[in-house]
Image 1 (cartoon, rainbow, N blue to C red):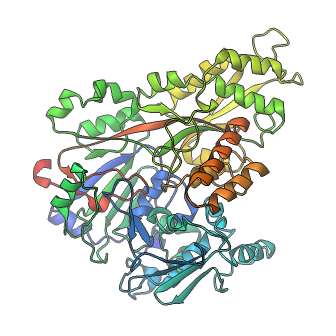
Image 2: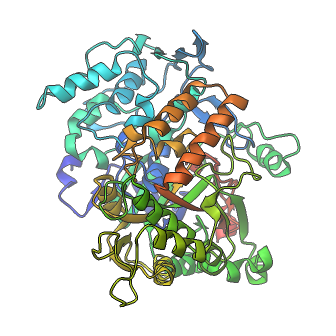
Length: 600
């Protein structure tokens, strides 16, 4: 049965070279774990959520990758033949690709072996600019100003109903020959290398595949990476198998000399052919308790992000619990390069706007958020207060920096509401808007046990301020879509950094990113100007000064209330060998091994 004939069934089942071996030999190494949030699909330019990208990061290949063991991070060639040639004050970037890399077999190639070429990257990057793709990361690349790409996109927008012209040559993005790719930018971009790194987003896709599957491309990822999709039951099960045509790649890394753990992993695995695991099976279990119990019952080999409500039980006094240590469960804890935040829809007539009274409402809500209670009671001490969107591990993060983002002061919050006319005029205990109309906040949430403690915090905090709150629930992917469309008032979400730079966090408030990464739909000319200046400047004191301006503007207008940076703990049974959580990016499966003797 061909792939297209399976699309009408509940699961998308793909041809698997390992199925016969699974049934007969029992020697296949399988790695099993669970996502806590459902995936949206597997087409890189259409994605922004972490869990979908965890899958695409192992199917597709970017030009460069982060060294698996290096701390701080080191960028190395992936499909590229070497590091890029940079010229013209960081405006011209030329990359040569390794010959002999092939896409996984697929009916779209009509029986031929399909080699990766420079034109595949040209096509893949152009897809971010195609208006019909609606990429949430469009603005992220648009700001790099590849010569001619803005005009090509505008042409497609004006010629409504006409397809994007992928065949039109563009000066800023072209293949010089079969294996040479060149980017030419209008302005200096000292950190453009980050846009060439990260297979979860910037991996190469084949044009034949996209055109063959059309609107179903989210279900048919075909790349050159170590794994390929085998089975997909939406929001239930994702099964991937080792790509039999994956190039010959061997374990190597550059851990720091004083990194004992990294050095031990390198000594153990150096020279091993990758990937070492044959099958990866991912279940979707949103409720924390079943996910944790499934791990303890050995149904899963690994738990990615220990549910916070079990932190006291699993990590009393920040040490692995004796019962877990006795079973030789491994613990991996790091300060994540992320931020949890509340997005306020700046286009909403109640919570949005730029007038003083509208700003005062958001700032009062921020002051009234009991972040200490969130960290202690709900997150069980597995987080630290956030001062801005700059996360640990990002350039510009400074533990000495302090802003109003972390203030908790109910008295100030009430005074601010009183001052700007949010008063209880009828004596019913609830405040009205300055014009006397009803004030009711709408918080979007998810219908799961994990979300309920945060809803209760919101209800407690807003009641303390005399503000009514309604909670509306939908699945996470639905909330993401609605927030991008400007249909939600308030949504609490987390956002992970994809690179060491701070720009991706700042992009969430950049005007042209509204509706994509810009969940709050914030549009402020002064901020946009600072954002563009940060793009241009090399790292240094001048860029730090501009970063502080950006942080001050966001604290003043409060399109987001950044709440915490999480301390995340992953756990694995002793037969999982070689794990180290990536700081940036999502790719780690190929570096793991399974000790089947220990599992038995």
